[in-house]
Length: 245
Length: 245
Image 1 (cartoon, rainbow over the protein chains, first blue to last red):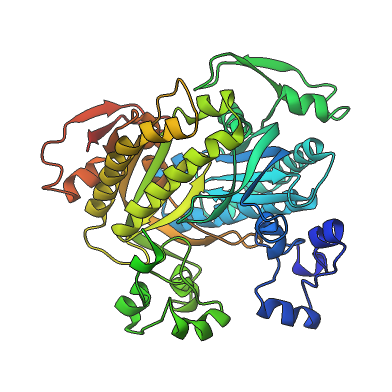
Image 2: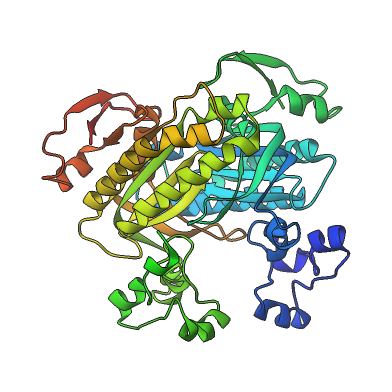
């Protein structure tokens, strides 16, 4: 997505505070001088939105109903063992970019990139009743675009013998979102929902999207043809049903 | 560590560019107006250091010899399944703070917090020949301080039936460090070294530190009494020797 396609005013401030905060163009300059600029986690929102709880809600963290998506580039570990860091980093750029585009298009926040994985939050700061569905649609778009691009990417970067696919896990529910830690401040989501989404991703095959029953129920009718499989996830007492989306 | 104990000028700029960049006090105000402030990843360095490759080296990423440490709070997933997000978030604050203090004391960069885990990089932007040893010492300090605090923490937060310990994995070698992705810019480390450190952490028991042979060799004589065990890590063709530090 080119910068010109991004929102001209902050969607978060407009929707929640009814204040037009310019993000781009000459009029945004005085705002930028005060540190108000497009968020790196979602360029349609601003740095005020990122810290909405501290600046607006006077809290450090909030408990919200939200959806968490983890996407992981499979085969990347093997690839990075056999080829130079520079050769494989272009591939990771492409992976991050595909994820970012799809997440932002569905009003999610690209909260973290961790090695060959990304973590996204849906329903903050942009509130969307359909956050579970938004995450599913973003995941499908990531898979579709990656399948279309991967052969050309592998060839362009002179890589060999790799099967690169993306595994995705999604879960919805109550979680803590905000700044954790006092010394090192960092914006992140915490709770079972986050852990379960991460574990669902870890059991997803390449090219697969696995969602929990909470997501399955909320994202209907988009998942009406989904079937579930039972998994015993690490760190969980009871087996869990995951649906292929 | 209190703010007053942090460096008054940026250690990174001083060591590498011989430029005194004030981080604290009245004299730092004009610098702050230009966005130069203490880094959230290491408060003894500044935001210029975070982006040293773009501002100073005119590259987006660099290949460096470095040490990666992953630390993960065990038992936290189980805890967050049974208790409220707010009750457990105080515990995570304490975990992040202990990690941050130890990492910074040994000149590392707290690069990421991801749910119940943190990832640190040693040898950037502060260059230290002893980066492997620094990481081991930071890990030992985290374990020591956590063992001393955890009972009081569990009690203070009204938590029950949990055994909270930290598992740590460390690996050294060449990796890519910089900004990956074009749309979403984010500072991170990429490469086998990162993946191997993460996998070593995943097999470490609570209260344990597991390091690779590369770290074992470099951190002598601090590891002279360490013994190795063979592990078959997920995603790796060959078994790997890990040393308890």
